Length: 272
Ligand SMILES: Nc1ncnc2c1ncn2[C@@H]1O[C@H](COP(=O)(O)OP(=O)(O)OP(=O)(O)O)[C@@H](O)[C@H]1O
Ligand SMILES: [Mg+2]
Image 1 (cartoon, rainbow, N blue to C red):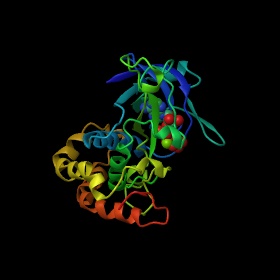
Image 2 (image 1 turned 120 degrees about the vertical axis):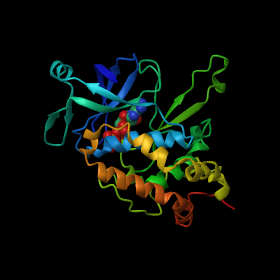
Image 3 (image 1 turned 135 degrees about the horizontal axis):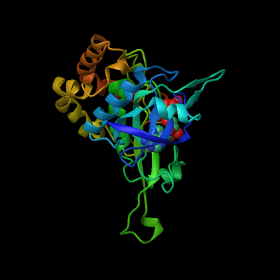
């Protein structure tokens, strides 16, 4: 297991997280068990990200990060600011999402203007992310980070393109509820531009196929075993029910995508 060695800075957001340097020499955005959203957010992050990776989606490596009582005691910054109070972060195993590089050198963007979205190398992956988010009933909009790839071969700046990675699976399975209130606009990314390559259901096919054939009960079981039981308060039955529902829902995804297509928002302008 990784250990957190040092707090670097606070991150913004509803589950106030901290950027931390860890024992592997890498940096992780750490969410704590006692975050104000829900303890299960950590399960959703770990399970969601690992399943998305198995679907072939661009994610970041995730890890269990042990944060010691001593580090929290010695770091006054290791608190979570709530609207009316401040609570200390809880020690123990927490969720870490790896920063995709050295935070002193690699600049990340939460959003890119439409113009620059054209320069994102793996923009087509947003179609796959929608397959995942419909399956997982992500009740938050899809969130990603963008960065410019360090490409030594490319001397000229124009050849350096952006890449995107999925982050924040916290509201999959409807956050702490662990149910699936499907709705047509749920899971869509804020900008239609990312779906310009979608020309029909076949644009989702690679991920739909992996969902159907790869997400077996065994795979779901395997991934869930890596989750610290404290994150779901030892309610293993609840976790099992969640996995069963996920397994059953796989075949619903094409219909859920069609419902999104039929909305007034018209997310897929080139669907013929
Ligand atoms: N692996 C990562 N690498 C770099 N930055 C990250 C990573 N994960 C999250 N962040 C950044 O940390 C901030 C908070 O992340 P995240 O959205 O997961 O938390 P949150 O508490 O759910 O926030 P919100 O409620 O605003 O969505 C964001 O600005 C995001 O870009
Ligand atoms: Mg978020």
